[in-house]
Length: 74
Image (cartoon, rainbow, N blue to C red):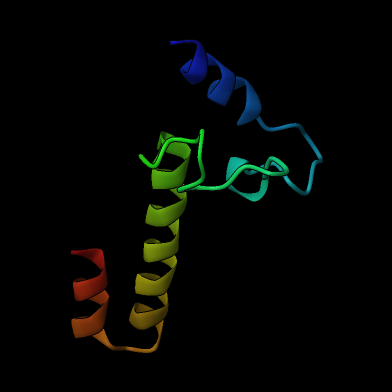
């Protein structure tokens, strides 16, 4: 529960901040699959991955490749 509250506090955006996205912020020394850190992705990680897939699908849609667009979304 405290971890969820900590993630929410870290992901709040600040007006006029060029790094307002929680996905652009990184903690120094924190990495996946290292001793002492969970290997299970967090909600922030899932948001970042879904955003990346949506960007790729939007690119395929923009160039007119509907088949690849739908494959990426699925």
